[in-house]
View 1: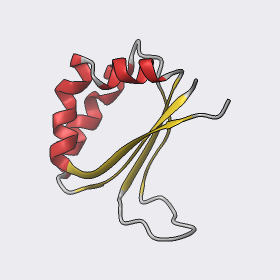
View 2: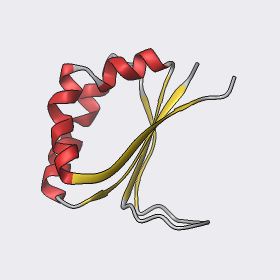
View 3: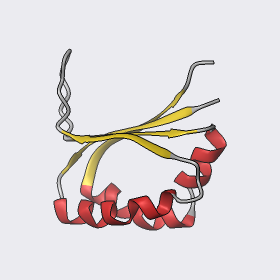
View 4: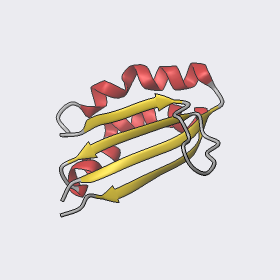
Length: 96
């Protein structure tokens, strides 16, 4: 079943975040993930949202997401994102 990783966060250390972002695409190779959206300051059409960045990534199944999210390559750079941002990552199962 398709899963989506939805990251929503506020960037408070731009330099560290950019260091993470520069290496992000390389970590996705071979993990069957596809970035569907990545936007700073998306338009809020209902309710409130205080973040500054939203990223939506699709994976064919949860196992593929876990292989990527916990891979040595991604874990090596994720420390930069974790230090540079505050927010959350949600794992959402697709329909059907």
